[in-house]
Image (tube, rainbow, N blue to C red; front, side, top):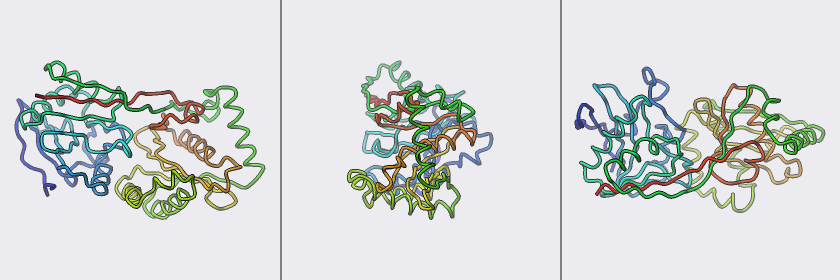
Length: 335
């Protein structure tokens, strides 16, 4: 069951904690001052709504906002099953989760949140997947330990990311000599074999049409990738296009037809590579990896500062300059 409107708050010291709905969450692009840190696309209101709409977990949303003197300092997007709390999202489609917080008031937010949930009868909080620099890891977990609450820890996965220099040549210099040669060789071979172009789509009309091409290419991939794209997963990808303005689709067109595609999110100064697809019939031209490479080049041209390959230990991520970042799961027992 989901409340239809935000509910009145309960005071925790000088802080007020209130329950929100998906509809009442603030738009990050229109929030006055925008002092909250929305750490990734996976915590954006549209993403939370898309995930809940499609996967409909057997839980109740418990989206908590914390205000200090009327000023919003953080949001905890939680789901509740009895006395168990989890972050909204699932590790199969959400690469890393977190709370949303004003970094200047992180510890105050985390204290008010822990006070509130323990007072509401929560006995266990499952937190993952989370990055080591997340507010959960640097705020909630240390405060829970200070209270003497047991915290169980486990490594869950690894993601890869790379800082982007201001120029394409600067990026190539980050690669090993062998990989730099391979990137240039693959691009040269494609250039000599066909007319090609990389295009990025993100506006409502363009991306609505583009998602159809992306899904078509996805079904042309390896059998395991095609099996991943169930009817529910397809509905989720369509919901992301509808609810998450940061969604971008990048296409590598070869001889006028889409041969490969990437689904990305441009959030803050980072491009997040979420998924990819390609026409196996064009595999001899390395269109799959080249589409990713060209999306990195496009991100540099647009002035983005980081490229996040997200979770998964695929070799190409290291080859393209990615450095490993561990992803964790934390379990807090409050009683």
